[in-house]
Length: 137
Image (tube, rainbow, N blue to C red; front, side, top):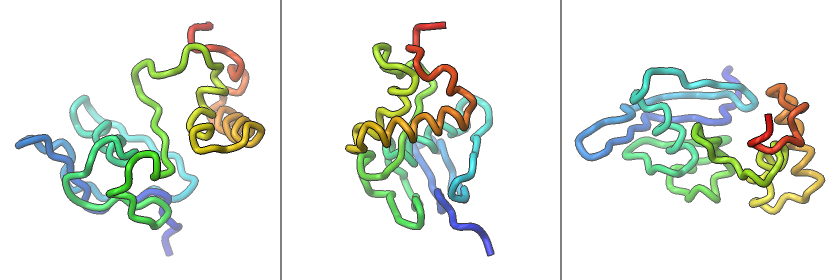
């Protein structure tokens, strides 16, 4: 028996006009797992992540989060967050507050969101940088 999938993509494709960026990908990521998409530039990694987050519409297929089909939901109703590769941090916020920002937008109380954000920073071994701002080295 497979563990419950936190994220599941079922034959998900993304086409931009006549160009296919993602071709019928099937992916199952167990809840609580850590997953990396690795590949050359232009292979569809960002398009796949943007479809999961709802920033791009899937051309076909289904996207499930905890067993619930979120394919047609807008980004704010998906319960996902996306960290962009380019500089997309709030320069006036600390590392901790940048990580907690999506929880703030969901209305999570400050003590709880800061605790959750700190747990995420600890998970990726960045807790010692929690109070630094993006421009600080």
